[in-house]
Length: 615
Image (cartoon, rainbow, N blue to C red; front, side, top):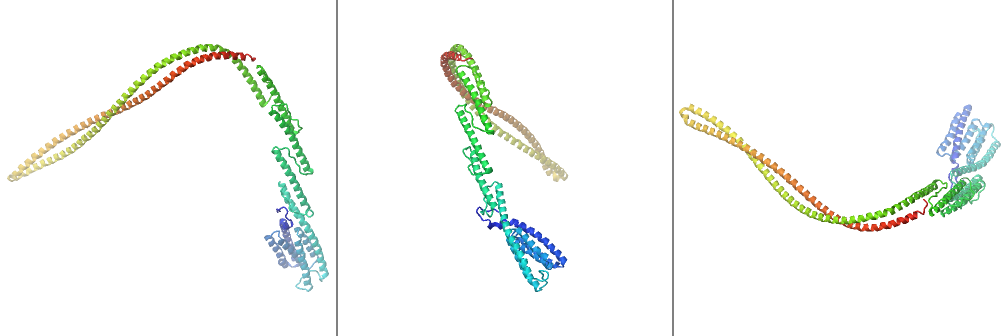
């Protein structure tokens, strides 16, 4: 149960102890099962099993049902308290009021103390008091076999029993109140301790009286003290983590917290002193002063850091002193000295680089000395060579002028050739057009001749039909002549007609054969004509291809001539540029000759300066 700071504990007591009381309900119900079994045993011994069943079973089932619906509730506790007294009353009735059976009342009342609640105790005591008064009266009037005490019922005995019950109930109520407060305190302390163990020191316990809940009050004070101390320590450590070493733990603390406070402050003080010293040393290094050292007292890793920094400063100071001496010697022209101080890491690399630079400088100065002599000697030779170059440049200028004239003539010739080529290309394209027209006409001629050949075939077929008709007519005329001969005088006229018809048929057959011969000759001649035309057409196609190729070749030649003309023009431009360059070279040669003389003087001066260094 999480209470807000300042809330009263009493208002939430039942809620805080609900889990414990639910566990107590389960224990009580388990004990009541044992009581029911005991009642059945007594009932079997006293021949009252039916009474055990009618009273004992409901006394168990009713509180069990209430617990099922509301475990740990006041209703569940009261139901169990009443049920315990019912089992006591049942046992008293089954044993006919035996005095020993009354002991169960006091025993079961004591069990209710486990609830840490005075209300079930009062309820149970009240119920058993009503039981004693009512059953005592019923026994005294002999009503239905009710028995409270063995023998005669006396009011004095009932009063004594009631006095014991009241006294025990009063003591139990007092103890239950104390146990309830202790249980509440234990639960709240456990919850607060759990929050503290989880690292939450900001949690606050409820508002309690220190006299009523002393343990909870002390734990709350401890938690407040711890929170204040940790808050101050966290603030100081945060400042240290951010590089601020001027903060200290100022909270009031005693015992181990006080010792922790002193240790933290002492640790920060030592760190501050060491780092202030280190800062001063580093500032000196930034200003070029390597003589400062870390002098603050330190232990452990801080002392190791201090020693490492001092050793590093000593090593750097030694190396830079050696470097200063070497540089001073270098300023005086001494190239023989080297950095010899011991060094590690980057300092050793710096040392090696300086020594290597000095070696390279020594070699370079030696080379410069030698080169200066060579430059002085070569300057004279260069002066003569440059004079020759100047003469050559003038000759080159004259030659370029002559080449430029020849190039301009070439441009003129190329232009004329290009124009003639364009004219030839136009003529070639005209020839190509004429050849293409002739080929079209040849194709038309081939079509006409082919039509003639086709018609000749048709005529040939017609002459064949005429020849067949003539043969049939001749055959009919023979048959008619035969019939006319049979007819005698009457058939003479018909025979003459038949003879004429036969002659006509023979003439028709001969004519058709002649026509067929002529048609075949015409077809053969037409085929020959077609073949000749095809040969001519192929020749014309060849002429067309050659003409087209010639035109393409002429076009390429014209294009090449145009490009060549442009190239020649560019050559002419380049020759003009070259002429200007040659003239510039001639002027530059004269300037270089003067420069070489000056270079010879500089080489002599350089040689004299290099001789100052000890190589």
